[in-house]
Length: 260
Image (cartoon, rainbow, N blue to C red):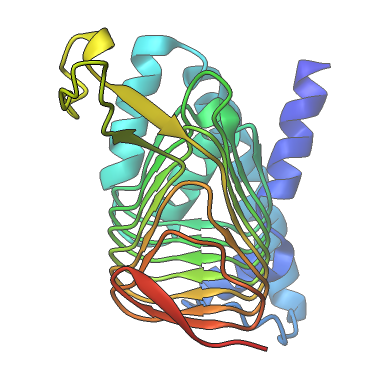
């Protein structure tokens, strides 16, 4: 049964069209191409090689210490077809779910991968950090999503990103943050996670981002925020309240400047 699952995973890792595009050096998501007769044989040969390499990576990814070494090699490997395949194969073995034709770039870091889901045809850009979060946390990314470089997603209480959405560079998404807590003596308590456990607490509320949402560079989405479909979050905004669908939001703390 495990052998069958491995075969199924490698079959779903990349489509024939995606492999042909990689051979041509085309990493866009334009799928309106035709596979030539000669390319079909090359694709079949590549899939055979990919299968055996994937089986090896899949086995190594299940061995704790060895898995860390494989992850390090995959993360720093060049931005080329081999690097994308190594990262794709490794995270296919580690994530709760990963769709087909996913591009994972250099230095992408995913903690608690067992609670992270990524849909089809996504691009995770360089230096992205995803923390799935323990104790009920998770991150679920839809189809055709682009997450830009230097983005941080904290899934401590759950983060959902809808299909066709774009999270651009430097943005922060938090479903859990350290908050002020005042005890009976009106004392402000530490916000440091290194403080004694009783000296601080974590505010945990899920974040939901709808479909066709655009989040501009260096924006921050705080816990308990729902962003409706087709909404636009402008550059540098801090979002602490729900955003209706088709709204345009900007500012610190952000205000809705246009709504349906």
